[in-house]
Amino acid sequence: MKERLFEGADWDFHTLQRITDACEEVALKDLGLDVYPNQIEVITAEQMLDAYSSVGMPLFYKHWSFGKHFAFHEASYRKGLMGLAYEIVINSSPCISYLMEENTATMQTLVIAHAAFGHNHFFKNNYLFKQWTDADGILDYLDFAKNYVMQCEDRYGRIEVERTLDAAHALMSHGIDRYPGKKKLDLRAEEKRAGRRRQHEEEVFNDLWRTVPKGAAKSRSALSIERRRKLLGLPQENLLYFLEKSAPRLAPWQRELLRIVRHIAQYFYPQSQTKVMNEGTATYVHYRIMTKLHEQGRISDGNFLEFLGSHTNVVFQPEFDDPRFSGFNPYALGFAVMQDIERIVANPEDEDREWFPDIAGKGDVMGVLRDVWANYRDESFIGQFLSPKLMRHFRMFHLHDDPEERAGIRVDAIHDERGFRRVRRELARQHDVGYIDANIEVVDVDLSGDRRLILHHHVIKGSQLNETDAKRVLQHLADLWTYDVALIEVDANDKVLREYVVSPRPIAAAVA
Image (cartoon, rainbow, N blue to C red):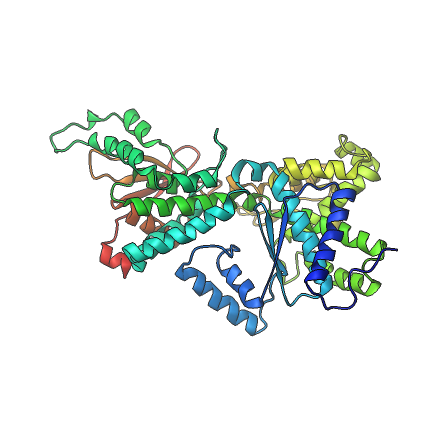
């Protein structure tokens, strides 16, 4: 029996250090985790609410929308309508975990195990985070972004800066690259280049617009479609990148703001694809660490029961006919699959050997899990490792609902071999960003005419855009482009389903 880490609910910073050391010992020696250096910060409830408001980034620049979110969350929290997360963790090196000062010693142990070792390992080792994020440079880049926005407000006025950021935030979800390029993102280099790259980009930009015919008598063939699209880098799915490089009337500081928002959007891109895996990994890790600490006698039976109460709430999954049901809880689904993989690797059944021949009975539980955590995202993770046993446990089935069919809603897949595969495939598809995110790209610009920007939305299974939201976002796009913008929705056969055309607002109207 080892010495207890704490007694009761109280803790101090020496206690936190002992807790962190104990969790690290289990994480590294027993689980074989590979983590960034840890930095633990203790914050108040108000500071946690502030972090909520800035999309979980306590070091973010200031913007009016963050204040709006803060007021909403604070009012809900004070009225008892919402609780607060026990922690927030930043994918950086060092990995920063923000702990609530109101937490008990047991809860501090839980969140250190969950964030400082579970999330930390996943951030460092998953291939998506390796491709798309720069853990070494993100903190410096956030500091640069915050200072740059403040300098722009002092120089160009708060209203002008907010107008540009409003438009950039509206386009943020369409300001990412979905396929890895040849060069890994280096945010520290981006920060250093911020003051040097303008001259070259302006020269390329001017060369493009010098090709535009000056008079109406000029033929449209003066600039061929192929040449025009090549100069503009079309088609282009990253709308913020296209505007940053090609919008004719943006000032250099506005282009830098678009670049900042684009880099922040790219930072979050892997997280949207790994919610189930990331939370499942962290939950599995904290469960293993807390169980080991209890077995070692480092936390008491009472502390362990307190942990189990919180853990059970985190992984609670309402039934499909429960009023609280709103889909699968990523903590519950992720943790359940991780535990199921442990079972399949250690004690497989005949069904498991048939469905998972590569891992069934392999014996090396942590080796298999570390490989899974490194090489999958939610879509492929669910599509590969969701077992029939787990589908029966969650009582999964698939409903077919096609408004064009008179038959109405029907149960399309049940618990048989074909049904298991159908359910798993459909659940995996619900986590495929290529399937659930709107596929919108810039396809052309009428340089020889009215300079209208033309975009296509490739509609999948009839899922067209909400008209009101589409027009609002297009308005921001038109304001940045400063000419008309047309969005054309097309089906798989390039048949036009609907078209939107939006004109830019006058500056005064846009500011108002």
